[in-house]
Amino acid sequence: MKPTMNLPTDKPTLSSLASCGGCAAKMAPRDLQKMVQRPPVRDNPPALLVGTETGDDAAVYQIRDDQALVITTDFITPVCDDPYVYGQVAAANALSDVFAMGGRPLVAVAVCAFPESLDAADAAAICAGGADKAAEAGAVVAGGHTVRSPELFYGLAVTGEVHPARVVRNVGARPGDALVLSKPLGTGVLVNGFRSGRLDGEALLTACRLIAALNDQSSLLMLQHEAHAATDVTGFGLAGHALGMARGSNVAFRLFPERFGAYDGVLPLIEVGVKSKGGTTNRQTFEGEVQGGGGSPSARELLLYDPQTSGGLLVALPAARAAAFVEALIAAGMPAAAHIGDVVEAVAGAPRLILG
Image 1 (cartoon, rainbow, N blue to C red):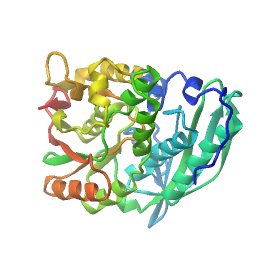
Image 2: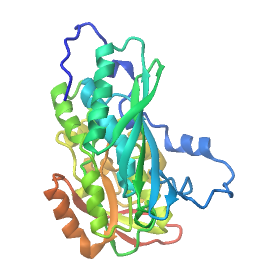
Image 3: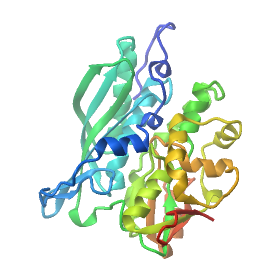
Image 4: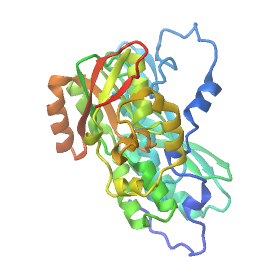
């Protein structure tokens, strides 16, 4: 339950304690690639079923014939000024990595970087929001670690479980598959719209309560509908995460921007020029791998590059299952779920993402 707080009016807002919000704070893709470049590891134990080789959502480590651990961590800067809702969004964002692998979260520990100026009641509310969201997912927050930091961030390190034969990876998409996205796009635009004064706090808070929705049902349903590959769409935007899937699967994706779902208010904000630094760096990094849409991209095309926080699952599955999968997602409370593209054969030297 959300704690009741009587807070002083002169305390700093959460958004004032970070230079940018949510997954828009993620390192630029090119900078991250340079940082993690290293010789390939050749002595991974056989029990490590998923490591760093394809940039997947989480590590998977087998401990028994019928059980593997799914291990991940994710933390974000504030997406809104309500501490409890921020904690919920941050936790849902971290838990999503386990769901993207087809797993079930079990236990988490909190990762907290709190400025000295952060009100103690706000800090408690952030942690309460995260713990409550983890409990909703069937997991428990069993501790954590805090440091003093000039910028505020919070998140979870999560351990889950999955049957080794049911791991869903971000590789394995096949030509002829359909691509389904379970949530709308536009969280980066919404957060920056608020921070730039173009979106009021209540509108952002309403969106954040939707953004905090878990991907648990999406995960269960993708398994039921024979998913070949999946990833959750976060800081690198739909373009970056789709490219990772396409490259790893040695295929190309044909995407239909007119089918992209968007949170309320996002498209008008894009049309008046609202964007985020993460969206700009994503576009600079990935636009060369996108074919079509010439000229000035439409607002819906620009959603490709928007960094998502607690985004939806992008799932490649047999085309014959796509309509039933979308219907099931909508029935489970995801009204923006949509068949947004198809998997096609890759052409040597051609872009991996095709708008059409």
